[in-house]
Length: 169
Image (tube, one colour):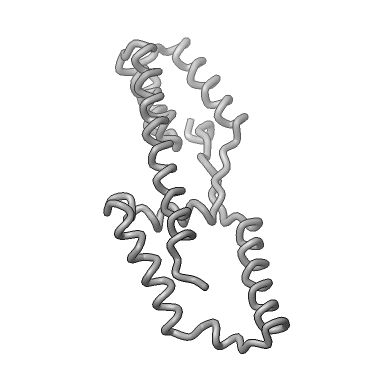
């Protein structure tokens, strides 16, 4: 039966985002060398690097609580990678689970739920198996969505703050 289970989201580095970062860096270097007649090595001096990076991190530490700041690495990782879910795959999973529940009963979904890669879907199916009323399941999942949105806003806020707080000229 394992061959019928969805593979889960496909994670990969986002080539468009990486390309955009490389184009930005290239444009900065080109403008600095060609128009400002600058030496590229002047851009990588340790003292200014430490001032900019250290100052930005220090300002972020002062602006955000520790739990939010500690998620900065995870948020950055998500920003440079893409995670795609196939909607058709999710639909096929729901159809398969509904068919199994109809044939074998709701309790038969317990083993299926443990094999799902999508934690949100897994938790919802487990609530169904546990006999939680549909209205309560909907409320629980909506709360989880709200909490996720709040976490994402905190991550976005850190990047916005970093852009505004970075000691640059």
